[in-house]
Image 1 (tube, rainbow over the protein chains, first blue to last red):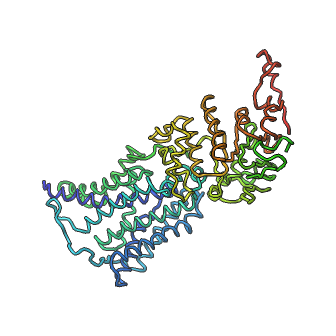
Image 2: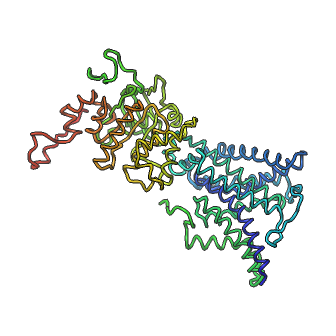
Image 3: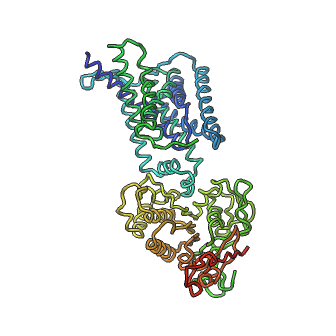
Length: 297
Length: 278
């Protein structure tokens, strides 16, 4: 048994898992604030990464500038999406809203393929040093940076929801919209804000993944990987989303290792999280941290 | 209004400037259910006004019409107007109304139970942009010292503490008018006394005008300077609080049975005269 390899895989899992956690957090953010299950979460990564890639390859600007412009673009993108597509659907049946987000997902995937083509495109190199050694393990420096970015985003989320008044207003809206309004919170604005934040944060993850693996439509697969993560953590728990993401990240890497060593079933990397998803739904349908609460139909 | 209407604090002969004026409003829920039918009332600046009435008379609806929260329940003011400080506020979204200085403490307290006391208080200050929030939190704790020690989630507070937190949260917005919906609901008599003592102090110390909806008519009239009695969506009786408290009909229907005419508990059924003004 190759322990170094296992260790390396767990580390990889944590790094990728942190990204899943970030995307899962932004998924939960939308769900908590506006009760929308967003099937287009992966497309936020996709759009963000393509926009950043386009900026960097078209204009002679440094990475950080392109990155900031991307974030500004995604803020407007998320907000407009909410105002134009989701706001008219407020009060409509859940299934209509879900179908709308599925539609958005398909639309943006096709749009990105139409504009940028179907082939993966590499980002221009950002780091001078390709790899560094940490604890005797070989790690790509982009991976390390990605871990740092994920941690920063999580810290930012924690600060936002604990200390900023807009974060508190968002929590109040998630708790009870009428109460929030009685306190002077504008609920439509909270909805728009939650979509904007979610789009921005997902786009950051998208750019990070794009830098590591190149930009392609495979990015939107993160939107699907988010489901096992949030179901594991509980649909409405931000801490749960982070933990769920980490667990899914480690799980798929370890599953791949187990598969390669003993099972030889193939492709466990992609599928293991969904086996886990089925198991969780059977055993603990509210997830690890979710609210135990079923709406009776 | 009756001739005893002038509140104590106004100069004799000068009509008090009403801070809030509700003129002949009609409220319809779901476009069909008529709840308020030509209701008028006025709340003078710096006073406590009580709004009394039986269940379903439309008291809470009146408050929601003023605060704009009606629209979150598919309700709508279809006729009449509501003036706050001389400006029309009916038809404005609730968060704008809060910014103008009207804050509703909703029935059943409605604190955010998965937040701490301090987070609830900071939420109350959501519409403010000045930096005095921390000082005001201290002020609220001075009014409600028992909240200071409660560091856990607000959902674990007792009913009385939750009511205090709800009132404290209202104070954080620095409103000019607080609409209070049944602050005594579900509280022990001792706590009711405490809460009403605080309501009186808030009015006296901070000069906050209060429109008070209450089932506990005796308590409400003891702190209010003026009162309205509602029935089936209309004001049927109004007058100075002291006069209302002495009114025979009010005594009988809202202050509970008492006095010489009932020494025995026999024939309890025939005792309750069902008088209606409408």
